[in-house]
Image (tube, rainbow, N blue to C red; front, side, top):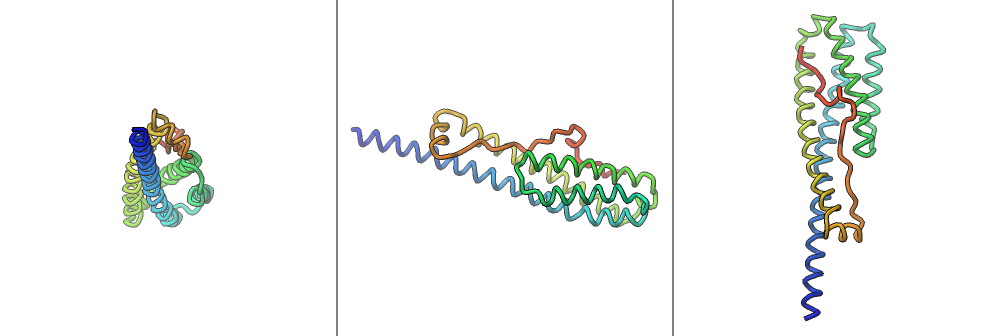
Length: 180
């Protein structure tokens, strides 16, 4: 009788542990989706800056701010919270860059600029979806880590709650405005 009870407890523990592993892997996979979209975004930015440079050569400070913010965000290997802060800075710099184009009608008509705008807009939408997917997986993992009885298994096996990917700056909560 005690062996049966012990086997049931072991099976229960193994089931909870496997569920926590599955949830942790889902969080890692969804973070990878965010990383993929961020890399695509980082690759588009230098092309966009070069296109705008041809029309607004005297706006060197804005270009440098965009590239500096892009490099800081691209090289970040930090937590989701730190990455979100870097993304806030980058989004602000991109808004400044797009604001410049208002002064240059011929730039807004440039086919390369239009294509880059469209690509960046699409990337921002995909990034937004990836963030929602990641945060949903984090919510599931955190609920399991903090709920009884899985909190006991999580505590004894080293599972910890994950960080949400949140944006603090209200202006950065919306995608970069690329429609003119």
